[in-house]
Image (cartoon, rainbow, N blue to C red; front, side):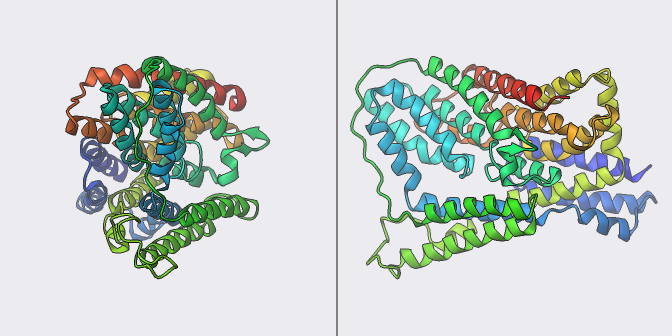
Length: 448
């Protein structure tokens, strides 16, 4: 038995757990890594500590720092009440309920560019529920729309979602490359094309309800400082892109510094040490210690473990073999290979986490490109298509993304149980509209 088979078995075992579980996923992937190493020793195919050290070098600490920093800034941004304040104003200035519903979905997609998708749903959902409750309207379609919209724009920028960070690290892309790369429009514009088509679907599903909107309470903003920190980090990433291509340690340090500044500021401001006599009660409910305690450590360890396991499989030639096989299935036709990569990503990501899927499939996409003689800079149509398919495919089902699960849970707690069919009725047409149009953009701009 080869080490490649051993690591493949334990990776698939961990992947199966990740697909159905939403807790302790980081522990699961690292447990699978340890078991794979021990089994390699037992079966006499241990690669040696030198190779293990090389594999461990695949853990991209820059991506982990970017993820951690942006997440911390987002948490403080929420505590300051900024996203909720914007949502309240959008409702109050909308023409009617139908327009407000569409605008709230658009707002959730914009917020999710910088804020975790689950947090986005938790921010916008209470205001949406309040409006629907006062009008005695059924909020099911609206909250599903908010969830799927939040999953859309996270793909558009380097800091929006972990899969985008993973792709950027693999392709040596920087913040600006998501907008323009090699003189051509990048992923950001593909997502915007998808957004235009998908929001026509949402508008049709939400329908036009001309009832006047009730008055809702607009949450106050205790301070705009976290927004300035986020803006400074985004600007800094854009500037760094000119000097340090890719997701380097410089980008990671900038993001984690922004996160640290935000958390420290939150601690002092909440105690009234920065000009506010007493911010307690109007500046969030959580202390800085609680924010750190509730930090998404599980996803952080999951990312590190996935980097390690996929790095091992790539080193052992497993990913190259899978890529060569898929290239053969496509008949070595670039368009068929592109459709195969995008379609399989959409289908599988409807039921499994897109973080391990994207990480595992990037080297496979590279191998497919190599079999098609599209290596170097000509392979981006495959990896970009992979990102679009994997990140948007999660919108099909209620278990395809964490934001979907939270949205369904919020509805259930408020007396609106959601069936699988009800969710798919919204998620499937939304996903098809966004994915087909976005993938078509990628093909025509980046295809060979």
